[in-house]
View 1 (tube, helix red, strand yellow):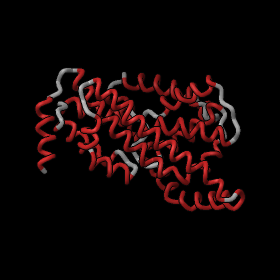
View 2: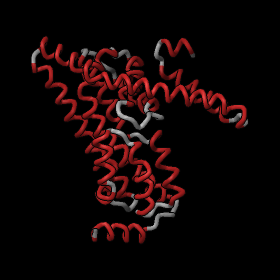
View 3: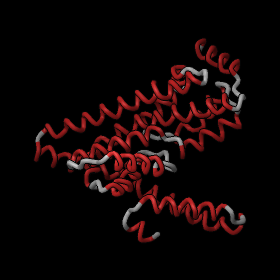
Length: 280
């Protein structure tokens, strides 16, 4: 496992982590709690380290983009503009077509859900952090007809396992960097990349820049140069805002879909709440 960590081989690391977690979960509480405390302390420390790096990142990103523009001219910014447009287009398509189809199939309206969460979406979009709106999303999905037991379980779990926006962004960014270096990925490599990103995106912290860190740890799986991340670092915050908003919509919809599935959705309560919003 140490050798896999040193070589950034994500799949063996993930497999070992899952097996280790299952084994740890089976231990008595008094036996596993000290180790859980250590892991929590390490995780919090790494978040702080990442935060410190992100504070100084704008200076480094400015230098990197300045050097790129000075060497290749303003034309080098065109690919970045195309990347931003592509990611936003893909996220809007996923939100309104894919999630919209799921909502319609379950008798819900994706536009009502977005309207319901408009304040939370604005906050999540502007801060690029989904953690800031977690309590409000639970309250609003509960007011929209989802039982508290389902909303309070599905949404926090979705913050770790239902990250549509993060996975979508990481896949597009990885292929963008591969094209940047002239690397022709085969269909097999692209599938491995997407599947790996789907797994490694689980457990991503809901803080700004978290997906960027995961992408950094995953590119080596298919032989994509990590240096390419420096090229997109300057626009990562812009992309982070969109993928965070999509994560919020996906998690709220998941709670409502599970409520429908379990036949515990209160349609009358949802209708009354939407009417109250219109009156306000």
